[in-house]
Length: 199
Image (cartoon, rainbow, N blue to C red):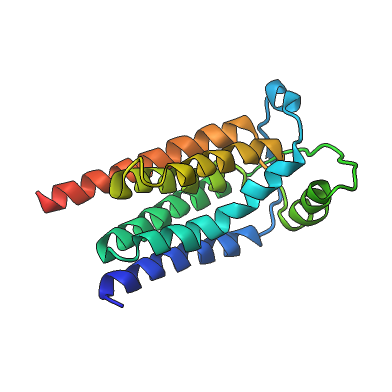
């Protein structure tokens, strides 16, 4: 492993570690930022699959794709780290939450969503969506470094990950919009700084 590889791993580890610490800090006051339109979005339990696929894609599949190019791997790790630091600040400034509907049913997807995801992943740290922010970074990274055509299926799947946050009622529309803007802005900013240093 080169120094760039180690830095990439460090950035990713710091992103995960800081989020986990923040995720266990209690909140004295939570606000609901949902809109009337959010209540019209149905729960679609099968979307729990793309929702749960977020972690292995972001921290296993994409790093494996980028591993051959140590500098690109480091840049990806750094971009995720910067985005996570911004998210962490926003989670403290905007302690958003949402009200989940009741969910009945005994099929596998419903049980997985209701009895695992909803119980383990409390509705805190929702604005902007972590899933959406980092998925957008992954989509843009694949497009700029690996080409839009080569990994089109993975990019489409990451779009499904973003959509899944609404259909499993882990996030509301404003969370998704915030995540898209945050992920795109950080990726663009890191790219601009990198090009400026090279120039």
